[in-house]
Structures are given as structure tokens and as C-alpha cells.
Amino acid sequence: MAARRGAGPVKDIRLERYREFQRRQREALRTSHQLAAARRGAPGAESDGEAGRPEHPGDSGAPPTAGDLGADGLGAGAPGLGPASSAGASRFGSAGRPLNRHSPFYVGFVGAIGVMLAIGLWQMAGKLTSTLTILLVALFLTLALNPLVEWLCARGLRRAAAVGMVFAGLLVVFGLLGSLVIPPVVSEGAALVANAPEYVDTILGSAWAQRLDENYDVIDKLQSEINARLSDADFLGRVFGGALGAGKALANGLFQTFTILILTLYFLASLPTVKRAAYAMLPATRRPRVEPLSEEIMRRTGAYAIGQVTVATINALASYVMMRIVGIPYAAVLAVVVGFLGLIPMVGATIGAVLVCLVAFFDSPSSTIIAGIYYLIYQQVENYFIAPKIMARTVAVPGAVTVVAALAGGSLLGVLGALLAIPVAAGLLLLYEEVLVPRQQRA
Image 1 (cartoon, rainbow, N blue to C red):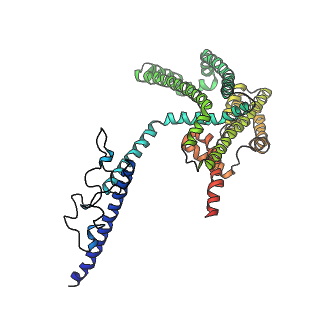
Image 2 (cartoon, rainbow, N blue to C red; image 1 turned 135 degrees about the vertical axis):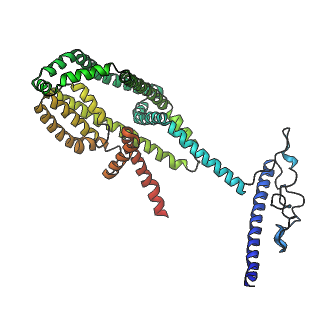
Image 3 (cartoon, helix red, strand yellow; image 1 turned 90 degrees about the vertical axis):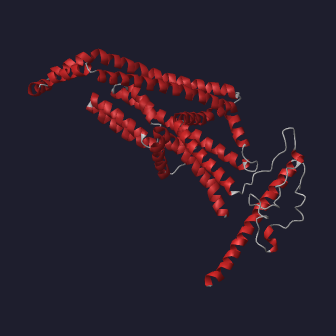
């Protein structure tokens, strides 16, 4: 009996919930049809019998019947269930009623499409990793060179002429670096190939090699192993495959470098237009706030890149002078390597110093000691005098944030990520200071 007495209130609650659901459905449909009628030039158009019908079948207190609920469960008196209005008729026919966006089927279907679209975009991004990397590098170079272009434009040059001058200077710099690196590498490689037999004879004629051969028959075993390898087709295939792979990688690297330079030229020439188009997509009320923040982030990125290049160039020039004075071989090539490694924040200069000391060790132990003392002193001068003076007007990032950003960027994108980590961290800090903190203080 108690169960029967409790069934009545439960049934009433369910009935009330159903009536509330029906009411919301009809309100949504009524609003959709009123908007559609207004767009067709017939605002407020409704069914003829709408005014005299109750809001929903349950308003009289009786449960809804099968006649009240139509075939779709929305009620026979719901607006828009009759014939479509002829106000929207055209030579292509009359416009049908809009979809009910509150329908569970509609919500589930659109949600499923959104999930599939997100998965497809993620897989597409994975396949376009190299292309996205090229675009990222080109954008970074554009922001790095844009301050020079703006400086030339401020002195009366047109932007096209300024972009041409800056890009020509970039090509000249790359040409000079290539002229410093390529000839020594080619000459030393040719000398190594020409003197290889002499080096082998010297090694085999040394006393320690003779003792090893007497005790373990090393030379005969080595010759037999070399002959066996040279007669092995699989080994030769792997060797030639590796050589072809290296050549393919070199050609791919040259093509990507050329693509980056072309994209940088296009981005530099059209950067104002691209920025205006991007700002035009924002609501007009947000532009006065977003534009200054975006311009400041781009200014900091470009200033950081120019400052880092300046610091690395000073390091390379000073290292070249030191190596020429001390007599360390391959001074020009090592100076270029030190300069490129100096672009990597935190550890780049240290890696360059270790590399120079290793080359000096194989030439003369005393040169290694001199080079080590030089770099120990120079890095203190760079950290406390050169870098603060140059970076004073670029980015102000705390040391802990710099270390974490460099580690995170290196883990995600390698050397490129480490290069981009500091300006990205500077931009996030700007948003933190100018957007998040003021909003929290006003809350």
C-alpha cells in the first residue's frame, strides 16, 4: 500500500518535468520561426490557431494524450508544424522550418561531428609537422627582421625598398658565412682523402700496432674482415643507401632553407596587410586592447632575436681573434660554429667553448689551457656586462622562467624550441601582467 501511495507523487513529478520540457521545446521552436519569418519579411508570422491554444497540452492539469503529442512528440499545436509560409517562396521553392537546436539528436550529432573534426585536425597536424616548422621559422625570422625594416621605413624608404635592402643584407651575411666555412671544409676533406693511405701506413708501422699484430694477429684479421665486408652485397647496399640518404637529407635541408627564405621575404613584404586582416577578425570593442598587446609581443620577439644575434656575433668574433692568436686550427670554421651555438640560450655558449677546447687539445695541450681560461673569463664578461646592456630593451624574463622555458622548448621542438622559448615566455608574461593580474584585481 505504501508503494502505491508513493507512486502518485513520483508520477506527478515526472509529469511536471515532461511538461516543462515540452514548454521549452515550444518556446525554442516559436523563437526560431519568428526569426525566420522576420528574415523573410513577415515578422511575427505564426499558425492561425496558435493564439487560441493553451501553452501546452498539460495546462489544464490533465496528462498529455496521444492526440496532443504528435508523431514527433512535440504536440500538435506546436508552431511551425503546419505548411511553410509562402513569404519565403522563390523559384527554388519555399524555405523550410529551421532545425531545433535544442533537440538531443541535433546536439549529439553536432557533438560527434566536432569530435571527428578535432581528431582529423590532430592527425593532419601530425602529418604537416615539417611544413608547420618551416612556417614557424619563417614567422620568427620575419619578426626578427621587421624592426630593421621599420627603422628604414622611418627614415623615408618605402617598405618594398626597405624589405629588399634587409633581405639582400641577409643573403650577403649567409654568403660570407658560406665562404668562410665551405672552402676550409672542402680543402681539409680533400687533404684527408689524399693522405689517407699515408695515415694508414703510419698507424700500421707504429710500435704499438706491431706489438698488437704479433700478439693477436690484428692486421690479418682486419684485412680479412675488410675483404669480407667489401664482397658482401648487403653491406655495400647499406653503405650506398646511407650515402644516398645523407645526400637526400642534404638536398632536403637546402630546399627547406630556400623555402624559409622565400616565405620570410613574402611575410616581410605583406606583414602590415596580414596584421590588419588579423585585427579585422576581432570584435571592434576588443581591438583597442588587443592591438597594442600584439604589437608589444611582436616588438619583444624581434628585439630579442636581434639582441641574441648581436651577443652571438660578439662571441664568434672574439673567439676567432683568440684562436688566431693562440694558433688553434680551423679558426674561421670554429668561430662560425661558436656563433651559431651562441644563439641557443643558456647552454649554447658553453657548448661552443667545449668544442673549441676539444679541437685545441688534439693540437696542443697548452692551447687547451689558454682557451679554457679565455672562455671562463669571457663568459663572465658576457653574462654580467655584454648581455645585460644589449638585452636591457628587449625582454625581461626571470631566470627561473628562462630555464624552464628553454627546457620545455628544447623537449618539444629541439634547438628550434629552445630558440623560440624565451620570446614566447616574454609574451606570456606580458599577458599575465597586462591582462590576468588587472582582471583579478578588479574581481
